[in-house]
Image (cartoon, rainbow, N blue to C red; front, side):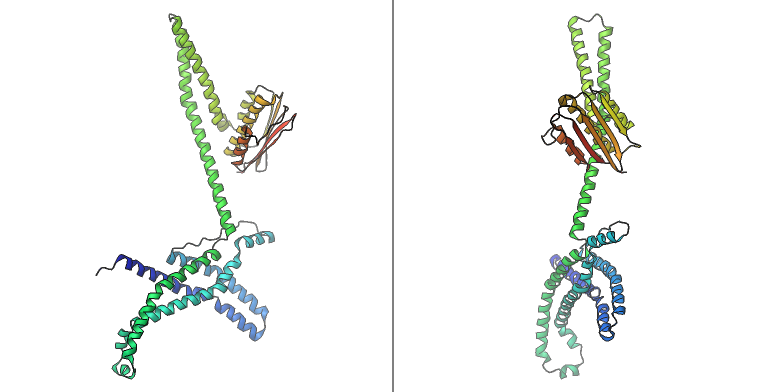
Length: 414
């Protein structure tokens, strides 16, 4: 005989729910003897100095164990995962202990096991009693006939009562699947709220996860930018240089060329050199190779040398900082120097880079006209977003008449 798939799934679900409820009775009642003993002992002796510490110690020792049991019970039987609250790694002090208590809220678990647990046990026992009564009533016809004949004869009216027991048992068994499932779902909701992390902890974990994902994304984008720079520098740029050299050799070694051909070659040679110059600027804009090879000091020295203004550069770094901080600092200074050259009408620029603790501070100051606005949708707003992508701060001070100071603070801890 083949059992229909739907009926088989229903039977498995009922067995799972009833097993879940049966496994929860003892854990939910585990602390009842403790506080019952405390109440009785205190009522009889009045010795709270003995009752309170002993009861508190037993409860505090039992709550973590019972919480672990409930997590295992929900995960194994209902496939409901109750996450553990994330630890708060701090050196011990009264303030850190208070913050830990505020973050983990252990009184929620105490309330679950001390107050809610007995109520849930009462519901579980009710469902189990209904299931046992229904099973006993539905099988009454079988076990009654197993009794001795004399006992059945002494049981007046059993022949008329037996069908009622059977029908009543079947009715109770029909109710058990719904009640067991409802009570199991009812139990899982407060367990998730009271035994799992609090809403503040879940939000903090989400923020930490998103911050980590953003950091990984920034690092991946930066690595891809460096790869593109290397491919352009080692591939396309070298081909253009070879093309320019060959065109120059052709003009130098072929004096018999006609005037038109020589003009075309000269024009192609000029275009190749301009393409090389534009590609150099593009490569430096993506990620200068010297920044990766020799660090921020060497990269900024080359950048300052290309600016058509006197630049006083001071880089105070004992060691290299994180690659992301180096890259953002370089592009902040590059964009600031470009703005000074194009718009500020300045005569000199001062660039200072130094590390203070776990923060890399960048200052670019010029003596130009001022009036720069980071909120006006210019390149400065793009710099602000780029600095913000690594949790840095970006400020621009540019009163009318100058001077203009661009300041960026970038986290660079390692």
